[in-house]
Length: 249
Image (cartoon, rainbow, N blue to C red; front, side, top):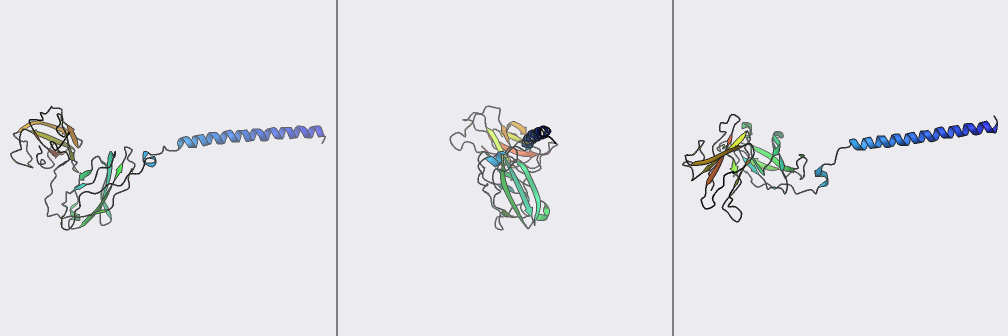
């Protein structure tokens, strides 16, 4: 084979190798770009600072029992819009929800946990329902079915208790009740004739319904003429799930 022919073969092979390397580089770059694009976005919870876990506020013991309808409460976590609550009994999960928008919940426990301990913890979530805190420490609560079961929303707002609490347009708030579809707020001109009843008061001057755990009063209220308010949980058909809460001024 003469030198001229050998040189042509060498040049041709070199071109083939260079073209192959270029195609491989482009292909790998495209694949890398596609893979990179398909990677999920980093969750807010992964890049934000980790906040302290919620602190439990109420403790049920063998001296201070919980009913089968206990109100579980914890301290509000800074800027946390949602909470996730889990409840266990005898190593079995009996309740779980990641749609709790208040720092507390009134839960309905099954009858078979009466006379036993339940174990529960809670953590805060962001709007994507990703955790922004660790779970709280496990809380042990003793359940006593002899205690009355009150399907009553617990109010979370106190008016007329200091600066900034005398509002022309109040926002009424309470802890949600498991099983409630909506809530009815009743505004009264004076305390009701009977507390924690199931019927509207003769002193009713206003009312409103909501599926949330708070209600903005669209009626302007005179700070010098106090009113009273209470709330009850309703079923889907509009029937009361329980009685009205005690009236608050």
